[in-house]
Image (tube, rainbow, N blue to C red; front, side):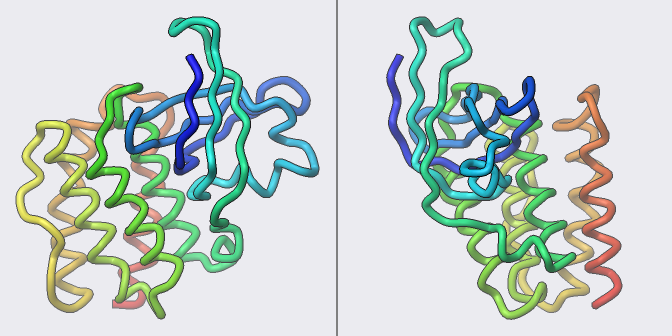
Length: 199
């Protein structure tokens, strides 16, 4: 298997002293995992930030083998990790996607929506500009995975967006994140608390 595609880095875990096992979302191949040699090294550490857009090269001898990965940075989310709201939002959408999506099943609409959501988080002047895109992505994710996701991107002021966000919390927890290792919903609870403070 040899794959080259644009991708979004969703998660990276340390493996050994300097390597990383990472999960990427691509439009054509869906969620893919791979081994990045030197992922924690000086050169690749800034690239291995969840939310980054990368040029992904995967290679494996068989479909059952964890592929080796080479990545080149296309767009970095690093500058926004110093802002608590943006960092919480990027962390949440990446953790949700990495946890909920099945591997190697393409969801082009989710790839496009996540790309747009990350761009909105990074380039909107405030959370009021990107919060509805984030909630719209959550609803789309539920819908694409077959769990309804009533409504789409909420319109209106931040209070209405937060109401829609509160309504989506239980289905996300019950359908997508039940029985998963780690408390992924804690990232959403933290984000909701930060958004509530500015509403």
